[in-house]
Picture 1 (spheres, one colour):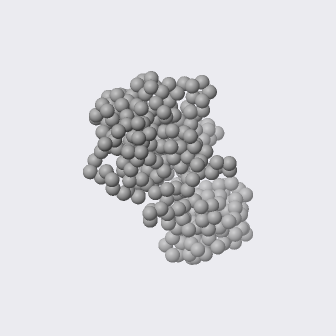
Picture 2 (cartoon, helix red, strand yellow; picture 1 turned 90 degrees about the horizontal axis):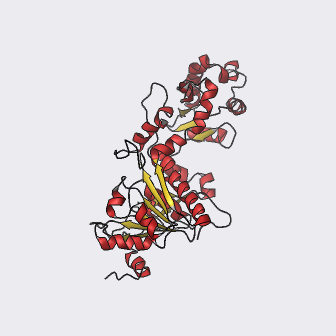
Picture 3 (cartoon, one colour; picture 1 turned 120 degrees about the vertical axis):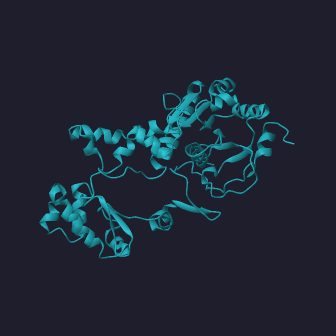
Length: 366
């Protein structure tokens, strides 16, 4: 069930964005077989590993030639292979692109790394902030004078990594359906996070080429920031367009205050107006501000934790979150009218499908 039903994927188990990409494809209906290493945890449940939901799990020791041959037999009947090893590891295992494409010429070979398959830094270890630092994204995501930090995993691992790999894989599959020829998709988190900057980079030339103006403004901007409420919870406002700013100050009862009316275009007044708004928002609870501003065009939102977001009426109405085996997780996205995705299923026990998959390959698993 799902828009990708009939798409066969082999995933070499790894960390982070590679498995997340595999989960995304599985959510959309692909048959994803993840090849996992043998270890002491084989056969144990792991319900919190949401990125493995919807997949079939087999255990193979890729240090053994017969296991490598099994993977190649899987490749022969697959459309996609996903791997997230350091450059060169798959080649040393005997599972590099040349070998796999020789077995399956239409295969789309998806490679997920931090810095790419080539270049002087292709072999370095790193995590999300590492790749964002090299791409320029971390600098642009940081207020001037503040410590550079970004939301964990979102911009590099998921945004610049897993999602770009998924787009590349699906584009490669479309092409392979046209001419029968597969190819390698080299998805690097540094590349993807840089590519995501193009919207911001298109704005900067209109600001005199001043990159500082492309960064988030300081907290002095009273109309783009989060404010603490009387109950200690937070709300966020972001009415950067004039018509939305007018909506906000009207609902706050400030539309007769000339300072606020002209405040959008008066940076000198921003620090003072920020202090006044901070005092105003601190006078009521988050719930009270939601009652006044939620559902309007004031560009308002409560700052919700994931458990709070899961029970928000809008998210409930759309089925954004679900709970499986006691683990809160987001439902598949995006949505399709003709081929809806199946409801998420529990994460399989490691190796749960080894016998099943080997039987499909007519390999004796005894």
